[in-house]
Image 1 (tube, each protein chain N blue to C red):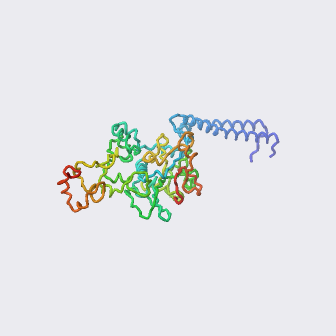
Image 2: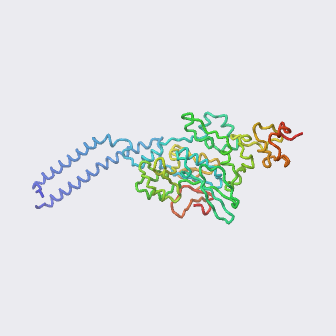
Image 3: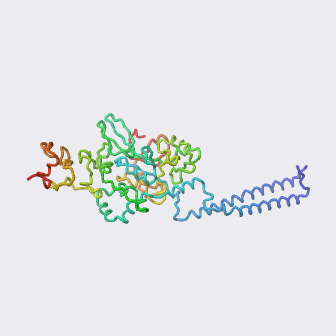
Length: 204
Length: 256
């Protein structure tokens, strides 16, 4: 161990010089590092970085208001209907790409889409409209009678209605359905319906 | 060597002084920079997590099992379209004649449901990450890659996760899965990118029956907070002590 100088003034002087060098060095170092330390977020933890990166993700499910910016007419119709709680993107898919890159939206006209909500199921609340699709329409596309934007048809079809071209009469008038044909009609071929029921409805 | 009392006091005084100055410099620097960060955060456009505590209420009686929430979540969060990978999923329960519950997972591709003749009644339970206030998944992560934000949402650091799946095992609700595309663990974020912009989570927006409601527990006028105060809401498996932030109404015993 080296000897301390006997003069306390020298000891104190040495200590002060050492401290000065140290402080000066620190300030120099800090000045040198400042550009790096002052980067925004430099003191932010990695969790905050991860949090920020989650927040930056793109919204693709836009919401009805944005759909209405372009599709006002159909939005008005939809707002009045019983389907007004079913937002556009529920059936048509998310609109993010549609707005940005004009990709087409999903327009699924098959019954498969409708029955995801309306197929009868004991687990569904009783107050929700449900049908056994096989009995209701034989799995035929719902949009022949129901407009998906405004699905209420105001009850069963009128008693006299025109023949739906290309629609199998038996969907509604088979042995089951809305308005079953008499039992003796069961054996008659489908082509023969219009021989008597030219305009649809009852024969006079 | 002898050191006089005066010398000893002087040297110790200088040492202590040096340490104080040495120590206070970085502390001052740190304080200065932190204050600067605080100034930046007072920007009104910035989201302040401390003002929010997010929670969700799921009304089981309202759910019709239509899976709109599932497809909305998948499209919003780019969840792989595989039958068993979900951020939010749906369970269908049937109550048999003897009162027992039978559960089945509803897959994304299911269309109708085969009615079970023995069942008298049933219900659907939409599930998602319960955003626990006491999350087991956060405790077990060896890399702190999953964490709870100040506003009560459990998030994943996708860069940090190594896919060890400890959290997948630890989660009592089965809310986590290994994403086969990124090979790291994925989970519901309450649509964090949406809620921080003032939008509701995609599943909440998509629900045609309003079975999911979402709100901020720190906002006195918030309907979700009001319901939490007024109604008797339940959580799934409260005995685990995970303190979920997803509350249910009409939750039957036996739903796990």
